[in-house]
Image (cartoon, rainbow, N blue to C red; front, side, top):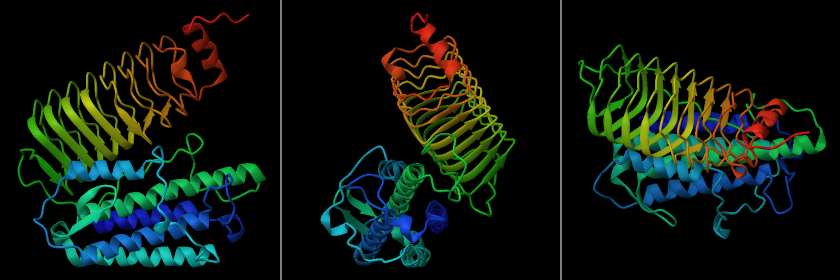
Length: 388
């Protein structure tokens, strides 16, 4: 079952975030009242154990799978932008004395989670789970939250590590090269083996499939779900979709020009050398999405929500990102000439190396954006400032 692979990838992400942290640093706090790395690990162990107990004792329910709901639940929990106070019952209480012991316990409970997923298989969706915040779930949705919760705190650990390293000046082994301070994007969790499509017609649901050189232009679907798949040189131009839900997908050289989608939810999706000219979505939620060398001229993504997304070397000329939320994203080496970013949240958005001449933006919209000195001079002129 693919959920097992997702949990294994999540374990690797968590172990990577904690790699090289000493026991001494694991007890440090980035700010008074904040958790330490050791406490974060303990909290993750407590929560994952609780989820497993819920699954083990959950009542039988009518099986259902709602991929879009799974993605939304994952996105809510995974995002560090939404702060939630942990109830007393799942707060750390000093169970571990060393980071080695804590990580050994995390790995043990994650191995238990993977065994449960492998043993239960599709019957996970026939198990009911009552969540104190999200209400009635099935076992598959609970597993998605296990993965999201650990990844959320892996990012918190990266933030703690960065703050303590900067504060102390200590030299530590780097976790991963970052585009901007605190930025981390999860890559797609792709299977090692893929299924064949079986025919030349694109179905409404694609899973663990490698597609290449398929013409699906002007496709009309109410729901279009893709998971754990690679799509190469697939033609989607002019397609119309009610709801699009893609998770753990890589698209290479695909044509998505003039696609129209009412709702589009993407999680851990990479678009490489793709054409998105005139792409339009009215309700858009993207997390851990990479678009590199994309032709994004005239896209209409107004009011879209982007979390941990990366745009690298894209042509975004005259793109409509009005009132979108790009906070904490990377927009590196992109052409933003005449792009509409009025009302867009650019807090901690890395705009370095992008062409900002002619970008349409208000004075308040640039608050917190990361730019180079030369870009700051250009933006000052855009905003009508006189520098003497």
